[in-house]
Length: 619
Image (tube, rainbow, N blue to C red):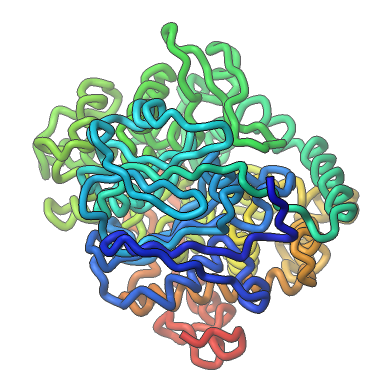
C-alpha cells in the first residue's frame, strides 16, 4: 500500500457521455480557503454549473468529496459529501454520509469525483487507478440491499448505490453506502438521471499519513476522551442513539405530532430510544471508524433491522400519530431498500393524511392508522397511482392540490423533526438554511430544546448562534467530521466544562458573543493542521466556514433564491400548537433583518459585493 503524506489533492472529473476523464489537482490555497468536503465541492461546482441547469438533465453536475479527516483515524471521520442541484428544490443540495464508500474512494487515491454528462447505458461506475463503466445488467431494478450484495465488493472496497426510487427519478430518492444514506434532496434521482446504478471504489491502494503524526496521535486521544466523557455522546447516543431525542423533544414540546399540529404526545415514550434499547435486543451498527457509536440495529419480529434515527421516528411515527416501534422500523427499512429519504417520506405522508381529512385529495391514509403506509412507500418509489404525485414532495403536492400552509417544507425541502414554535432560533435556522428545511445547517434546537442553554421563546441571541453554527458546521462538513462530535468538542474543554451551567446559560443568552469567544473548538482546526501541515487557527476555520456558507448562498441566489424564500410554513407563523396554551408562533421577521446584517446580505437576502470581496469569493 502506497503512502500519501497529508492528503491526496486529486479529484477525478469524469465525462460519462464521452467516456473521458481528467485529474484535477487541488492547490494548497484552495485547500485552506475551502478546506475540503462540502466547501471544496461547492467551489468546484461553482466553476462548472451554469445557473438554470435542470437538475435531471445531462448538464447537471454531481460532485462527491471526502475531507482531510478521512482515513486519518480522527474520531468519527468516515464521512463524505455529495453536492449537486436538487430535483426536489431546484437549488443546490449538499448531503453528508457515512458508510464504507468514502474510505474506499480516499484509499483508491482520490479526494473526490466530479460526474458530468450521462452514461450511454445503465451502468456501474468503477473507480480504481482510472475509471471504467460496466453494464449494470440485472442490478437495475434491485433494491439497495440486493444491489450491494450482488456487487460482491473486494476487501476495502465500497459502493454508493441507488434503489428503485433513484432509477425512477423520484425527487426524494437517496443514495446508500452500506447502511448509511446521502439522504436529502433527491441525490439518488440525479445518479439515476445519469444512468448510474452504483459507483464502486476499489480502496486499499493508498494510505494517508499525517504530516504531523505525533501531534495528530495526541489530538485523537484528547478527542476520544472528550467523547467518552460527554453525556450526550457517551451516554445518550451510545446507548440509545439519536432516538434519545424523543423524550427530550416531547418534554420540550417540539416533537412533530399529527403533521406538526402539536409538539408532544402521551404515547411518545413507546417510540423512545430507551424503549427501543430495552425491547429489541439492540447492538451497535455504526460507521467505521466511529467513537460515538450512535447507530444501532435491533431484532423486530425475528428480523434484524436498523433502529430508526430520531428524524425517521419523529416523521414516520409521531408525525403520523403512530406509536408502534415495529411498524416504524419496518417502514424505515423499506425506505432504505427503495432508496427513499425517510424524512421527506414521513412529511409527505403527514401532508397526505391531513389533505385527505380536508378533502383536498383522495387517499386511504389516516392519522393513527398504519394501513397502506408500506404500500404507499413502494408506490412512491415506483411512481404508481397516488405515488406519482407524492414522489415530487410536499411543495409540489400543495401547489397542485392546495394546502401550502400545512406543507411542512422550506425552499422545497421537508423540515426535520423539531417544531420551531418551541425553539425560535431553530425557526430562523430552518428559514435561512441554504439547502432548505435543514436542522443540521444550524442546530440551534440543541441549545433550546434538549440542552436548555437558551430560552426557547425569545429572539435574544438566536441570530448570533444561528450565524455561528452555520459557519462552524460548514467548516466541520468540509474537513469532514461527524457533527455529533460538536457536543463533546464544545462542552468538554476546560472553560465550558468547569463553568456552572446556570452561569454558562446566562452568558449564552445575554452575552452570546462573549460565550462563543470562550468556546474552544480547536480540536477541529488542530486536527486539520496536523494532517495537512497547513496552518489553520480556530479563527481561520470559522472564517473558511463563513466563506463556504456564503458561496452556497450565492449559488442559490443565482437560481432565484432571495428574501422571499427565507420563510416558514404558515402553520409555524400563524398557528399555535394544540398543546401550547400560550399559542406561540415563530416571530421570524423580527430576526431576519438582523440576520441579514450579520451575514453581510442586502435587504433582499443577496450577499453584498463587499461581503464577497472580503471573503475572496470571485464567482
